Amino acid sequence: MPYLSVIVSALVFIAFGLAAQARNGVWREGVTLWQNTAALSPGKARVHTRLGSVLNAAGRREEAREAFRRALALDGASVEALNNLATALLASGDTEGAVVLLRRALVHQPDAVQVRYNLGVALLGLGRDAEARAAFTRAQEDLSRNAGAWLRGELLIRFNLGNLAMRANRLEEAAAELNAGMAEAHYRLAIELAAMDQAARARTALERALALSPGHQEARRALQALKQGK
Image (cartoon, rainbow, N blue to C red):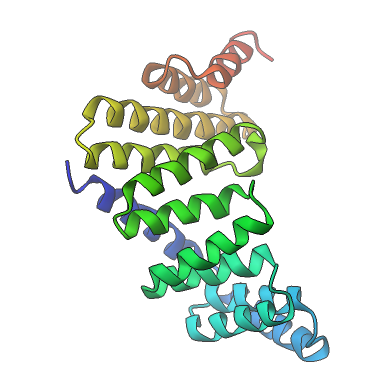
């Protein structure tokens, strides 16, 4: 049981690593493009933020951090640059530095769900579980008011809340959160399958979602629509 949070985190990092690897050619082209753009527009913070993002995706971490810092030197209130530099610091092991930057970003945009989620991840890494839980819960509340803002958000938040509950030995709460997270995953899979005209597989995914979380109203409505042939 104590290893579940490690396993879940590893799966997430593997997924992102494979995505970056599959697109290395694209990122290389992007680095050249944004390096040229930065040379032509050195005073634009957004350009340096974009350059940092493609450098980071290409595995050039130190250069990415420097690009984000240049962006912040030009615009210290850039939520995107603050969040991206924080994420880069988190990956390099500077978790405390990441927390400082994420809190700064949230001063400028308190309802930034992904920033709030990243803060929860950083606090979780520091063992500050109560603060992490508060960050994930607030992110979940903000996401509920704007469900389309981050499609994977509910799934990731649920998993982390479940992991926190498990660490506190609140096993029933952990099971409920993790089941809800899996239900969300099946629901998202069903939406993708339905878009590819694979109605039978979509219906199976929705049924699994409801078996895990009977109160998942979006899954229930989607299943009803499938049954009615809509």
